[in-house]
Image (cartoon, rainbow, N blue to C red; front, top):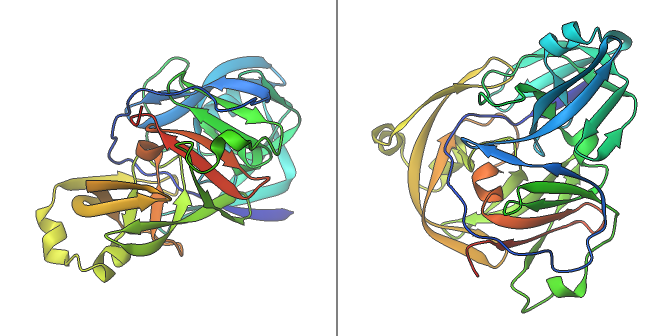
Length: 306
C-alpha cells in the first residue's frame, strides 16, 4: 500500500469583505467556469460527484493551500464510493497534527462546467463549514487546482480553469495590475509579502479564512506575547483535529507586490510548517487574480481601486 502526504491549510478566522470589481483584461479562454461563493469567509463552489450509487450535488471549499482534495464520509456512504486499496493519505494540518485517512475512488467530479475523470481522494471530516445549500462535502485542493492556470473573479462570483499561458500585455506596467513571482512546491504556491516592511514568505491559501501570521514570526517582528494576550481572539480546529488559539493584531502595513495596505489587522496563530504567513480568503475576495502556474507568477489588482 502506498502512502502520500499533503498539508491542508484550513483555519477558522477573520473575514474582511471586498468591494467592486473589474472585467478580465484580455481574452481569457476558460476550460471550465465554476461558481465561487463567499459565505462567512469560506470560499466554496457547488460540485457534482458521481459514484457507484448515482450522483450527488454538494459544495466544496476551494483551497489553494492544500496539496490535495478531501471528501466527506457522508458522501462516501451515500454514493457507495469504493475504497482505494493502493493508497492512503497522511493529512497534516497547519496546527501541527496529522492523521492517516483512507482514500476512495471518485469516478467523476464536475466543478461547474469543468469535468474531471477518475480520482483517488482521501475521506475525512472538515471541522467546521458554513451551512449552505448544497451542503459542504469536502474541499478542492491542489491535485485539481494546480493542474491549470486559474482566474478568480469575486465580482461575478466565479473562478475559471484556463488554458495555460494566457498572460497578456494588459497586465503589464501601468495597467493597474501587480505581479509577483511564485515558488511552486508540489501543488502549492509561495510568494514574498511584507509586514511592517519585513520581507516574509507566504503560502497562497484560499482555504484559510484570513491572512494568518505565524506567532513565531510575529514575535520576530516585535509583537510580545503579553501584547497578543490583550488582543481579541479565540480558538479553532483544523482538519487534523488540532486546536489552535489565535489573536487579531493590528500592524502598520501589509504589502504584496506594488500594493500596500495601511493599518491592517492580521490573525496571529501558531503555524507548524516552514512559512511566515497564509495569504487567505480575506485577500482573495478583494482582488481579481490570475494564478498563472505556467508563467510562475501571480497577477492581481484590487477591486476597490476603480
